Image (cartoon, rainbow, N blue to C red; front, side, top):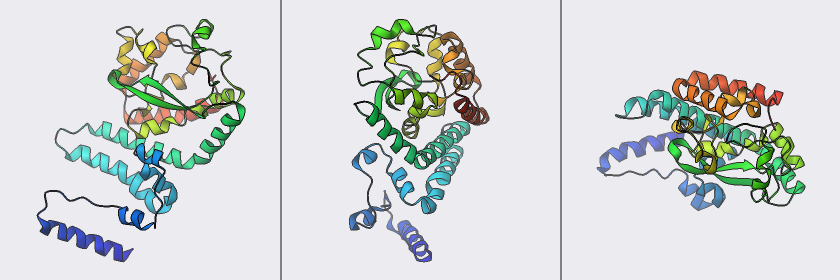
Length: 285
């Protein structure tokens, strides 16, 4: 470790003597080329999440760099950079990165068991991907564990009249498309766990309004579109206040209030309340 630190200091000193317009650190490149460190699968690299793979391989050595280091860097960058995003936004993003990265590493066994249970219970992929509308109306692909049959989208029109919720958002306690495994993972919000990937990619936040389908956003009133002013989240005000029991209009008002008053402290409170909401299963189906 002392030798590596000495070499790093030497490299930094030489960098100042090179008079180069661009200096690019190579990180673990030579370890990869030499076969000393195994690279992440292609899918993980494509998602720009190789650092999560490395963190899972060496959590003790890399936790400080990737978790605490990322959060500290974002906070300092916000303070020092001219015209940078507000400090609160940088702190919020840092919190999102730390929580989502930690969750992906710690909950890896839960991910694997859930995927196996879904595959054993019904045919089709374990992971469900769908287009949703995010901040400022920008679309993105959301990730969830599949809780319905593989033909759920084709049968959607046939079950719209079964909605338990008023307004444009469909939700039915007796939805026949939900599988046995699906009902369990929905009850404990396990189906939402893959969205930590969306958070790491910057498409979602830990806390925020739930991202809606494009067909639903097309029916929004001008006031309802105000919930698109902030990043969508995994959890939020209405999720800890009754979830599916909350009507659409009330959900919109909750989201608008959050968007106009949000703080990092409020996000922390909502995250803590989410644990209680998940354990109580209030409004979860």
